[in-house]
Image (cartoon, rainbow, N blue to C red):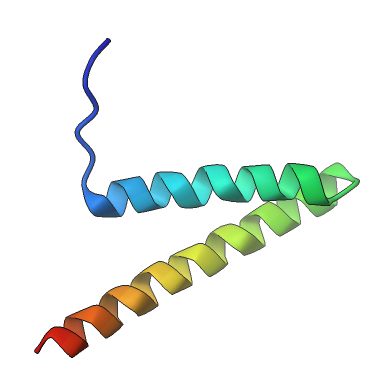
Length: 61
């Protein structure tokens, strides 16, 4: 099995994607609601990822 060598950013994107898919599937009833909620949570994860990244960057000095 080939070894995966992911950066922190790539790993965070994969986590966001998989978590959004799971949340969409298990929390909503119709396919349309699942897609909308999955996309919404993915965008929320990305906003949090970039927001916390900038906060750490600015806080580091």
